[in-house]
Image (cartoon, rainbow, N blue to C red; front, side, top):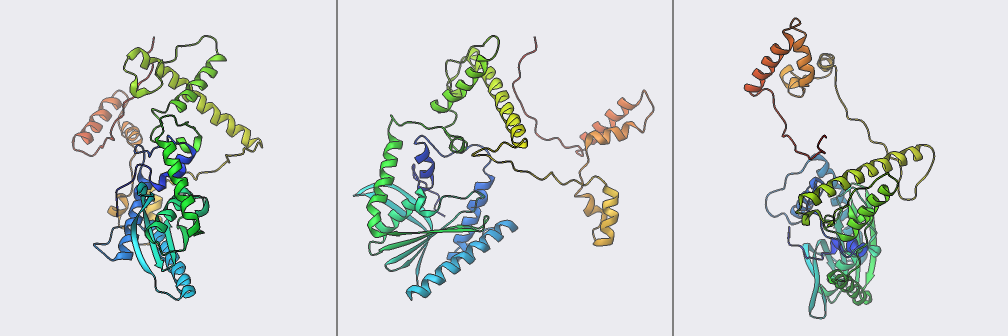
Length: 375
């Protein structure tokens, strides 16, 4: 796979159109992005048959199988219609230029060239849908680059394949649209590069942005909330002079920032609780809806479970015990019950220490946090 990314890559343009200060976020949980990258790598391997097969989990294999079936149906239908065998370009870099000047570039998952007709397929392995191609900035940039790469093409048929959602969207572009698409992308990137760009915080865009910490517009909105909360209280506290935490070096100012954080966090929790109460009472919101999450499965009757499994399958006791987890607190309670009053604490502590010394009591990594000092 091509790992090089443009500063203003096609995949980021939709976010940048909502706020020109948006940047890719490299912090936080990247498991979903990694899983998607692994699926893209497998699709590239399957289409090119080059190198060793990348490993996949069972769900990833299912998503890739759906994607392959979509590719087969899409290409077979166009082949039957045009009566030409396509030439495939896998993980193809396309460059968008304005005249001789490079505007940006990106990597298309799959281009199938049928002479005057180009077929572009882009896999979306995530759980969130994206706008359909004719309303999608990434698709429009890819189409502009493809028309420039293939000067003989007069039409591009663009397909987004969402295997996890079992969704397939498509849009058709004509050669005459290329100049406008290129100019549209160029104008957006020009705005993003401007020092006078207007930042536009929004809940959906900001949560995926890598510039949240230093964003002045988002910082002002957060402090406005704190000031609003203060206005309804008796007494106030000083807000920090600097909103960007990375620029706060004075411990006194950081104390102020921590106090503001505590108030803002409490306000956020109160908003969530009050909104849930309103929704359960029948109030409907424009952009939010109530959803349920299943509780975590748990087996509490260990012996009964093993006895039942013996009648259903052939699991041996050592293999079964390897799947079980012991709650140290419950174990301590059980051990204490074995000793008379006056000896419970000392004997339990000794036994737990012995388990710790021989490596049977594992400890998860600890964490550090700041809290207000007690007076």
